[in-house]
Image (cartoon, rainbow, N blue to C red; front, side, top):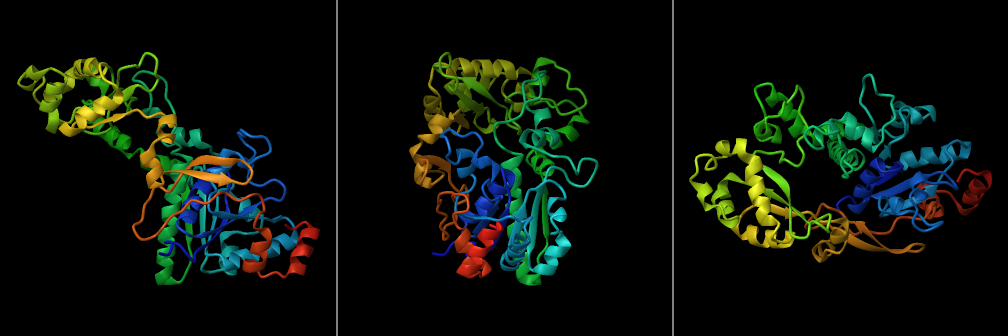
Amino acid sequence: MTKALEGVRILDMTHVQSGPTCTQLLAWFGADVIKVERPGVGDATRGQLRDIPDVDSLYFTMLNHNKRSITLNTKDDKGKEIFVKLIEKCDVMVENFAPGALDRMGFSWERIQEINPRMIYASIKGFGPGDYEDCKVYENVAQCAGGSASTTGEAGGIPMVTGAQIGDSGTGLHLALGIVTALYHREQSGKGQRVECAMQDGVLNLCRVKLRDQQRLAHGPLREYVHFSRGMDFGEATPRAGNDSGGGQPGRILKCKGWENDPDAYTYFITQAAVWKNVCDVIGKPEWKENADYATPEARLPHLDKVFEAIEAWTMTKTKFEVMELCNPLNIPVGPILSMKEIAEDPALRKTGTVVEIDHPERGSYLSVGNPIKLSDSPSDVERSPLLGEHTDEILKDVVGLSDEEIKAAKEEGAV
């Protein structure tokens, strides 16, 4: 079986997280991803948050699997010549530099088209065109500017960012889809095109249900939010609602047995209308099935605090896994709050390749996240990240077409 993107060559000019997330996904699917790094320095994350001295950090290794690394000094004349050759030989160039950085290097979109009209030039920026287009953006800035933080946190509390990297990794995933779409379009048109993703846009796309609620708010209170049952003011914008469900089925995080000593002894419990009678039976409230205050979804909305208090009194007598075992046969949607330790040790995630163990020549064995997208006929193996410049000679010879003597001269000149 061949890999899905076998034969596609990616010129990876990305660094830190958003861009490398995109190119790693393409590499998992079989694209030949050539990561271009500064000689002697490399991607900044190689040295950030190190847990072992003088070894590539987990920050770097977990975002750069299945890639080849070449060191290249694009400020050097010979280095620029090599860079032009790489543009000629590659299908896609991906970058997440500060706005205008590649233009200042002399490689504008127009120049890239001249070199290779089939090139797809993909970029991640913090903001799209507008007042903030030249601003620098990091993960939490994107979460704030994209609407996520204003809608996350406890009702009446301060805004909160989420631990999920929806700004960086989320935008990288969006860009990967844009690249694959542009590659498909090129099959018909024969031409490359620009693909751009703004981190603010990517976060907003993932927060669309909150933009939905902003519009609903103009027509009355959001009755499924905790504010309604507690008589709180909604204000003019979609409010923070703690762990309330974002959908039409009320849900909250509830304590389970052992919560006093285990910070993750909790479950998420959804009171889905279709199985309300099963909920009543399992928590010992059969009388609620016919009670006018609880029998219908609309009737329950003003009483959600009382409903979840009763459910929590039951969940606190069970472990989070016992809650799942008892509720799932009754079609009651629940889910344990799994810690990163529990996820790392989950045999099912290991079996599916969602969590993988990787051997690295310097750091030894470590865990990483595998490809979350599974294709039935295209394998997606995870290979270790490259050492800095590990494939420089190989790429200069096989891709750029330099001889051994030319490679030696380029090194002496400081181009690579």
